[in-house]
Length: 614
Image 1: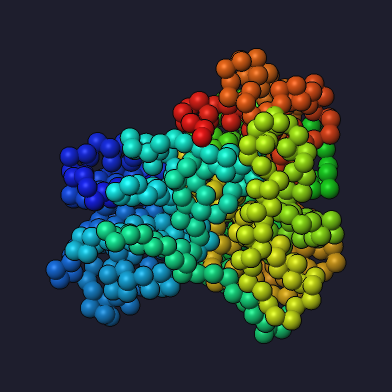
Image 2: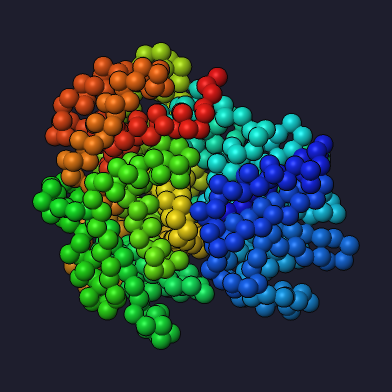
């Protein structure tokens, strides 16, 4: 994993402006602490920060290759899990290789097949290739959008980077935000509309897209979309296929020249990934698999069961570890860890985010990084198998909006009247929701209920999952840890997308097909345990710390928040204490303490990022 950045300009000699390119690369040092490099020619420059995972000696970037009269240069962030097979195919076509890196395989694939190379790839990636002869830039992002890629079209050129901070570091990039950008933050956030970069003129290459840029203009195309069709397999075949696909995916994603671990909460998804990984470790003689879980000091003391989280994770993580003979590490965090790193998590996202849910992952990843460079996570299983409550609750199914954000009125209640009029939150969310529905790949002949579940599945995969993938990427790469997500393998996603809902679930029991597929690898109590979300601290000291921090900001009359929130309404919420009714800021984990944290981050974001509102 790495960080990439670049600058194309048809009217300037970038060789004379290399310091601007280096300014873009510098903020990405956390993504690539093991090396850096830049490459410049008259109208194109690219930079790279490297995190060594495969081929320490041969994978340096930017990497160039000449074929005939043409020269190509690549910067690349990601992993190709099938690069060994692709290398053999390309050798059969006559191509020779000078390294063992997947970077060289990716670059050669583009030389051999052009944009069609994307159909050959199994992996997570965001890359840019400059064709010096044709003066064209080709960029692409993986099918599920696991790896990030942003760009901004300038009057005479293009900027791109792995994170927004790289583009914002360019001296010609304005830090301007309009009403739509603010609506992304305060009406949708921390979710976002695919392609929207919040800052005016800053865009995201969305999942499954490629971009071609030349003196004649810019073209963006989708090379992959979900397709709906009848599911031909019976129950047994479906179970076997799910298990086979997941097993193959985990095995591929264990490939690395550095230590690999798994994140293990004791829930179904992380336990399934860990069970398959532990078995491959044993078969390959790699010794015991190291597993990691995160928890909070005094969790047992402050935990109160809810319908979302009925019991603690820690005993289950230990139980799974013992059964699979892994070497387990439980990382304990306390309130000061969350307070001290709140702004670091905002800077990692370049935006206000998910409060302690972000910050705890950042600190957790920092601890894992002391021992390993690559981890596997159970992220995305709930999205593709339908594990979230909104797939099952009648009110959520009937809701005519994003099902995880049904109480927008309550959320907007803390905003000032003028700000609400400016960002038009209800109209904005409705427009984004209708746009999403128009994209859903329909299946002719479905019942209204099945069609609605398909809609919710699509919304979850394309509007909710990116929020968690962004979080996973930014928080882990902020400390130079690569976390892979086997459930995002496109083959598995394509297959599960068309499994009938009756196979995926039974009554109140969710993700039944995944549980059935994992039989024999995990004990029944683990297989049928109720879903438990990523832990959020219940310690009242966190509420107190966030309330205190926000109080101090609101006392500052120069704070940008005075133009955003209804100060008296927010103070009223703060006076009510941690046991009061929660304002549902986002999903099922962000209550009032997290609302305060979000507003603290927003205050500092406006100031640190020198945001100019138009």
